[in-house]
Length: 268
Ligand code: ADP
Image 1 (cartoon, protein in one colour):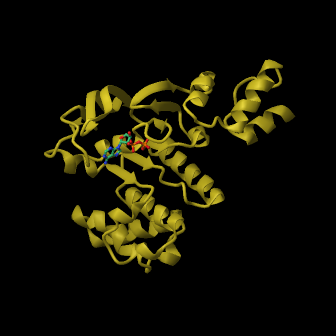
Image 2: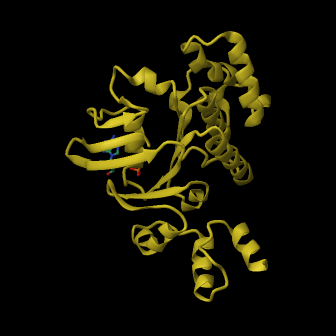
Image 3: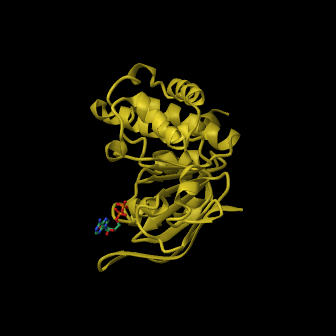
């Protein structure tokens, strides 16, 4: 069953058509990675899903048509984490920033405090709660943006290149936390990126080029479309390339998205 539906969406900036009769359905509880080279339409699609650009009733989220009237109902269950969150910060401390969206929904202060403790512990933000979000490093800002989204206990989480500046080890840890949200709490995750490596956490990969879906599939078969990915300038993960070659010699059974899995299978 779909939690997001886009039907015949056409969108343009002046004379530049980004989407022309674009269609997409995203299943409830899935984790979908949407990748594509620069200019393929990822940011525009995030803005459309966030209601920051007009979609003229072509988008349905959580059974609501995305329009002015339903925006509040959609936003209280949909968390967005952005690549450059500065534009969205509104408070002078990280703590206030975390509280902000829940205060707007008239949640009790005690509940907000409990949630701040839980999320700041989860994302290791305890030491920066009193700091000004604008004065943090890029990676810390991205963690705060993600924390704000998780404060809402969203049913849908949209990540817009949202973890790119976070140190690689910490990023892996956060992806694992998000996988837990996805599997255990059934949060639907839509992750926009240009890095195909990130796809290893998702169960479906969609590749956009020029506002069109050029690849759409689940793993590992979706990487049979490797040539299409290369043609539009996307770098195929090393583990995929290597495991495809090893598969030809029957050394591994399937395409692997992570090196660890590949090494484990080779050592079996
Ligand atoms: P991506 O996020 O994949 O890089 P975008 O959604 O930013 O892609 O861009 C899709 C197309 O829309 C590109 O051709 C880009 O030049 C154009 N575009 C994006 N934002 C604007 C804007 N504010 N005004 C005009 N054209 C834009």
